[in-house]
Length: 145
Image (tube, rainbow, N blue to C red; front, side):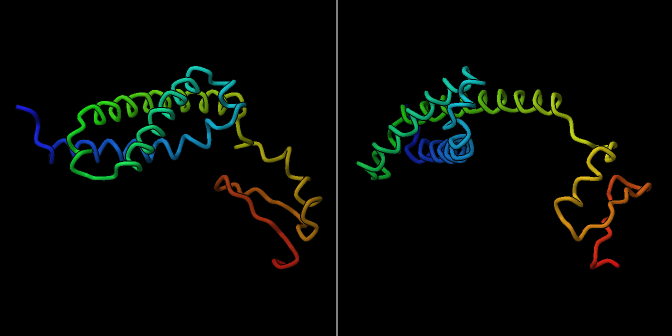
Protein backbone atom coordinates (compact mmCIF):
# COMPACT_ATOMS: atom_id res chain seq x y z
CA UNK A 1 0.00 0.00 0.00
CA UNK A 2 1.48 3.41 -0.98
CA UNK A 3 2.14 5.91 1.80
CA UNK A 4 -0.56 8.41 2.64
CA UNK A 5 -0.36 11.70 0.68
CA UNK A 6 -0.41 13.53 4.02
CA UNK A 7 2.68 11.65 5.28
CA UNK A 8 4.41 12.12 1.93
CA UNK A 9 3.56 15.83 2.04
CA UNK A 10 4.90 16.19 5.60
CA UNK A 11 8.12 14.39 4.69
CA UNK A 12 8.39 16.55 1.58
CA UNK A 13 7.80 19.75 3.53
CA UNK A 14 10.42 18.85 6.15
CA UNK A 15 13.02 18.06 3.49
CA UNK A 16 11.98 21.07 1.39
CA UNK A 17 12.51 23.52 4.25
CA UNK A 18 15.87 22.00 5.17
CA UNK A 19 17.00 22.08 1.54
CA UNK A 20 15.79 25.64 1.06
CA UNK A 21 17.54 27.04 4.13
CA UNK A 22 20.82 25.27 3.35
CA UNK A 23 20.67 26.24 -0.33
CA UNK A 24 20.03 29.89 0.63
CA UNK A 25 23.09 29.80 2.90
CA UNK A 26 25.41 28.16 0.36
CA UNK A 27 24.24 29.81 -2.87
CA UNK A 28 26.06 33.13 -2.38
CA UNK A 29 29.22 31.26 -1.36
CA UNK A 30 29.29 28.96 -4.39
CA UNK A 31 28.22 31.65 -6.86
CA UNK A 32 31.82 32.89 -6.54
CA UNK A 33 34.13 31.36 -9.14
CA UNK A 34 37.05 31.80 -6.74
CA UNK A 35 35.48 29.51 -4.13
CA UNK A 36 34.51 26.94 -6.77
CA UNK A 37 38.13 26.90 -8.01
CA UNK A 38 39.39 26.31 -4.46
CA UNK A 39 36.73 23.69 -3.69
CA UNK A 40 36.00 21.96 -7.03
CA UNK A 41 34.38 18.84 -5.56
CA UNK A 42 31.96 20.84 -3.40
CA UNK A 43 31.39 23.25 -6.30
CA UNK A 44 30.34 20.38 -8.57
CA UNK A 45 28.01 18.99 -5.91
CA UNK A 46 26.48 22.42 -5.43
CA UNK A 47 25.93 22.80 -9.20
CA UNK A 48 24.05 19.48 -9.11
CA UNK A 49 21.89 20.58 -6.18
CA UNK A 50 21.37 24.03 -7.71
CA UNK A 51 20.09 22.51 -10.95
CA UNK A 52 17.75 20.14 -9.13
CA UNK A 53 16.50 22.90 -6.81
CA UNK A 54 15.84 25.38 -9.62
CA UNK A 55 14.04 22.74 -11.71
CA UNK A 56 11.89 21.82 -8.70
CA UNK A 57 11.05 25.48 -8.04
CA UNK A 58 10.16 26.04 -11.69
CA UNK A 59 7.84 23.02 -11.84
CA UNK A 60 6.24 24.02 -8.53
CA UNK A 61 5.68 27.55 -9.81
CA UNK A 62 4.08 26.21 -12.99
CA UNK A 63 1.78 23.80 -11.10
CA UNK A 64 1.46 24.97 -7.47
CA UNK A 65 -1.41 22.68 -6.40
CA UNK A 66 -0.57 20.90 -3.13
CA UNK A 67 -2.43 17.62 -3.63
CA UNK A 68 -0.71 16.61 -6.90
CA UNK A 69 2.66 17.62 -5.45
CA UNK A 70 1.96 15.57 -2.32
CA UNK A 71 1.59 12.47 -4.51
CA UNK A 72 5.05 12.91 -6.05
CA UNK A 73 7.27 10.49 -4.14
CA UNK A 74 10.04 11.24 -6.67
CA UNK A 75 10.14 14.84 -5.46
CA UNK A 76 10.72 13.68 -1.88
CA UNK A 77 13.52 11.42 -3.12
CA UNK A 78 15.13 14.34 -4.98
CA UNK A 79 14.90 16.54 -1.88
CA UNK A 80 16.50 13.82 0.26
CA UNK A 81 19.29 13.51 -2.32
CA UNK A 82 19.75 17.31 -2.34
CA UNK A 83 19.94 17.38 1.46
CA UNK A 84 22.53 14.58 1.46
CA UNK A 85 24.66 16.50 -1.05
CA UNK A 86 24.19 19.76 0.85
CA UNK A 87 25.36 18.08 4.07
CA UNK A 88 28.49 16.83 2.29
CA UNK A 89 29.08 20.34 0.89
CA UNK A 90 28.74 21.91 4.34
CA UNK A 91 31.21 19.41 5.81
CA UNK A 92 33.68 20.18 3.03
CA UNK A 93 33.20 23.91 3.56
CA UNK A 94 33.74 23.55 7.31
CA UNK A 95 36.96 21.59 6.71
CA UNK A 96 38.15 24.24 4.22
CA UNK A 97 37.42 27.08 6.67
CA UNK A 98 39.16 25.23 9.52
CA UNK A 99 42.23 24.77 7.33
CA UNK A 100 42.21 28.52 6.59
CA UNK A 101 41.80 29.33 10.31
CA UNK A 102 44.85 27.23 11.15
CA UNK A 103 46.85 28.82 8.34
CA UNK A 104 45.87 32.38 9.35
CA UNK A 105 45.73 32.44 13.16
CA UNK A 106 44.42 35.50 14.95
CA UNK A 107 46.56 37.79 17.07
CA UNK A 108 45.24 36.37 20.31
CA UNK A 109 47.79 36.70 23.06
CA UNK A 110 50.09 38.93 20.97
CA UNK A 111 48.56 42.41 20.76
CA UNK A 112 51.94 44.19 20.58
CA UNK A 113 52.36 44.02 16.75
CA UNK A 114 49.14 45.93 16.07
CA UNK A 115 49.19 48.29 19.05
CA UNK A 116 50.75 51.31 17.23
CA UNK A 117 48.46 51.19 14.18
CA UNK A 118 44.97 52.17 15.49
CA UNK A 119 46.24 55.61 16.51
CA UNK A 120 47.16 56.27 12.89
CA UNK A 121 43.67 55.28 11.80
CA UNK A 122 41.74 56.96 14.59
CA UNK A 123 43.42 60.16 15.67
CA UNK A 124 41.41 60.44 18.91
CA UNK A 125 42.94 57.26 20.39
CA UNK A 126 45.96 58.04 22.56
CA UNK A 127 46.84 54.54 23.75
CA UNK A 128 45.70 50.93 23.75
CA UNK A 129 46.43 49.16 26.99
CA UNK A 130 46.04 45.36 27.28
CA UNK A 131 44.41 44.33 30.54
CA UNK A 132 46.31 41.63 32.38
CA UNK A 133 43.19 39.95 33.79
CA UNK A 134 41.65 39.11 30.42
CA UNK A 135 42.25 39.15 26.70
CA UNK A 136 40.44 42.47 26.29
CA UNK A 137 42.03 45.86 25.88
CA UNK A 138 41.22 49.38 26.99
CA UNK A 139 41.39 52.43 24.73
CA UNK A 140 42.26 55.87 26.06
CA UNK A 141 40.72 58.52 23.88
CA UNK A 142 39.71 62.19 24.15
CA UNK A 143 36.31 61.02 25.43
CA UNK A 144 37.85 58.88 28.19
CA UNK A 145 40.19 61.60 29.46
